[in-house]
Image (cartoon, rainbow, N blue to C red; front, side, top):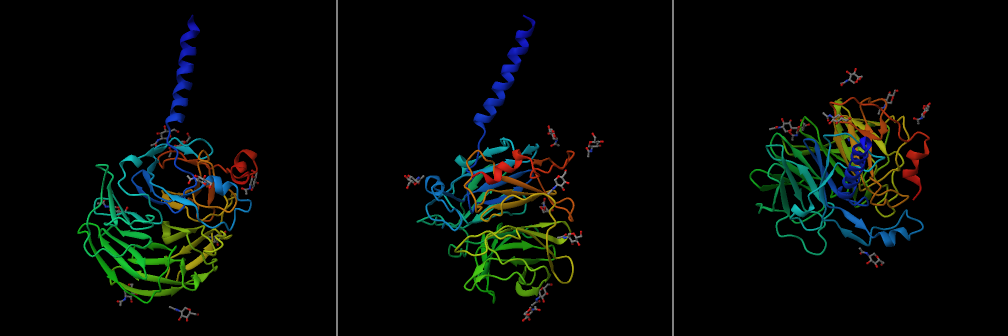
Length: 383
Ligand SMILES: *[C@@H]1O[C@H](CO)[C@@H](O)[C@H](O)[C@H]1NC(C)=O
Ligand SMILES: *[C@@H]1O[C@H](CO)[C@@H](O)[C@H](O)[C@H]1NC(C)=O
Ligand SMILES: *[C@@H]1O[C@H](CO)[C@@H](O)[C@H](O)[C@H]1NC(C)=O
Ligand SMILES: *[C@@H]1O[C@H](CO)[C@@H](O)[C@H](O)[C@H]1NC(C)=O
Ligand SMILES: *[C@@H]1O[C@H](CO)[C@@H](O)[C@H](O)[C@H]1NC(C)=O
Ligand SMILES: *[C@@H]1O[C@H](CO)[C@@H](O)[C@H](O)[C@H]1NC(C)=O
Ligand SMILES: *[C@@H]1O[C@H](CO)[C@@H](O)[C@H](O)[C@H]1NC(C)=O
Ligand SMILES: *[C@@H]1O[C@H](CO)[C@@H](O)[C@H](O)[C@H]1NC(C)=O
């Protein structure tokens, strides 16, 4: 029977494909307030809150629903970027590491690649539910695959912050009214006061000249304006500020910021008001930090965009900004929905949301996933 071998192979192939799908790890798609960090060709994700689906799906007006009835996530996993993947198919590039994690369930933590060897992930603080761990710093060595929970000297009180790493010194900077600096090698803390009032839900971006730009967030008087930007210089540990020009973006919290080529900080998403959680409509704005005066503009996007969101993460990988999860105003995604969105920023005058991630060595073909075809738009609006 000459063809039975072929048939056998055929079944074996599909069996394999099926097995891959069954064994593939899929992170909780409804995770909010998780955090991400790129190490080599892997984006690591940790924590977040998971809304109770039963309750959320019964909500008729999804918008403005407060964030109660969420459980903290203990998930820790990475997205493998060494092979291409498409967001309109089941993503099989996830690798689960949750069982190795020693961090209690947590959300809204600072999480960054930091340390001298470019292979160490550092997490500080956040919301751990009722009981805080004694040592608030957790360190993951991506080479030995080991977590540790070291004692650090001068540890501040727990607080929800965002962190940014100075790779030159291995120091991680966080902001909570004062600047907290963790020396990730010596495991010691420094605290630097200043005149900037306490904020949360902001982002920090370190520029090559040592200035950390504090963007957005909420202080006692509401969402901070995007016109006057506080800057903290890591070389002389002082604050100063700059008034930006150009388009004035809607004030926002829980957006994301990534630094792209040419000093362009891409700010994506966010809510306009911490109480209502309505997402901003100008969800993709760019701060050009290259000149003496910073200039805001609205990004040029030639494709349709996914629904605006907050509580997501964004990670820059080559010329792609990879957005994961978060909260939109329309629906709660199911666990099979692969809520990953990819913005191709290779042409700064024409950003595109695309369906395919291709490692940089591969040929990149631009697709427009959001242009008219029902197949691509159902993803966003049917929930
Ligand atoms: C979600 O809420 C429902 C209804 O209140 C409850 O029965 C269920 O146990 C909750 N699920 C989780 C995971 O907390
Ligand atoms: C390029 O893409 C092919 C499939 O399209 C994949 O098998 C290969 O691993 C990719 N190459 C690199 C360097 O990632
Ligand atoms: C670590 O990464 C930074 C940023 O990508 C780079 O500038 C630096 O040279 C790297 N250091 C080492 C030791 O690889
Ligand atoms: C700190 O450095 C920044 C950037 O170079 C500069 O603008 C600022 O004046 C400096 N502040 C002090 C107190 O030296
Ligand atoms: C920014 O603008 C405000 C209001 O116009 C002004 O009071 C402030 O002095 C300006 N700050 C700088 C650093 O130019
Ligand atoms: C959008 O394109 C126009 C010209 O086509 C350009 O002047 C503007 O700077 C672009 N915006 C951004 C954010 O790059
Ligand atoms: C959609 O595709 C058509 C034809 O290919 C093109 O003319 C149009 O500009 C596209 N629209 C968007 C938003 O990309
Ligand atoms: C991409 O593919 C085209 C056509 O196959 C080929 O000519 C070109 O060299 C490839 N580019 C890269 C960077 O691999």
